[in-house]
Image (cartoon, rainbow, N blue to C red; front, side, top):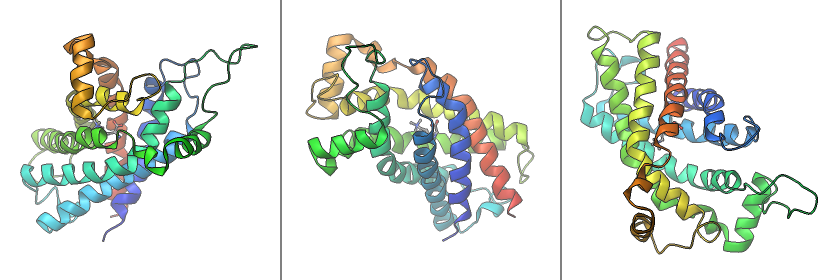
Length: 264
Ligand SMILES: C[N+](C)(C)CCCC[C@H](N)C(=O)O
């Protein structure tokens, strides 16, 4: 199994994340606060996404990454490979994403004398507390909602990227850097726009028992959120998600393509 896609996915995910982190943490004062944990985790997850995507395409079309601009795969194959990558990465992402959401939702006032200490002291303490309270499976709280969010939307992600690259590149040639940046950025926006409703639900399920009540399942969470707050609840975060998605995914795709082409 070719591994360079995993490595390129790893590095490109980390770089994209450095850019996206301030958007992710916009509610907090320190923009780059707590960056090492997301870098380490999202790099792994992006490596799984791009590695599984590329190897699924290889299995479906018998073309390696280097041959793919000259012999472009069908959009159906791109979609299936993207969904497969999305499905596998969702399970790798689930525990990391849960910890991130739990830590980002800790908005208790910072260490004022007499104020209660935050529930979690950091990522490791958070993971250990969740395991202690809910057992190791507790780390996968909300994983199903995350899978529903990521499987189709990562199919859309790669189809949008491929489509935009092919639109602006002469037939069978490699796209230039500017094309890759723009196509990657819009792929991120398209994918996040579709993913936002399930992103809201996913985060609520992950906060179940803390900020929100414990839901019986994805459907229960959707229905009760919509009943209490109206349909607008599904679009919460749409603007910030899209603003974050452009730079993150432009850099991710550019780095990914650059690394793979320089490794020949
Ligand atoms: C599928 N969904 C839109 C939810 C995520 C897309 C992931 C792409 C990239 N790692 C990023 O964080 O933007």
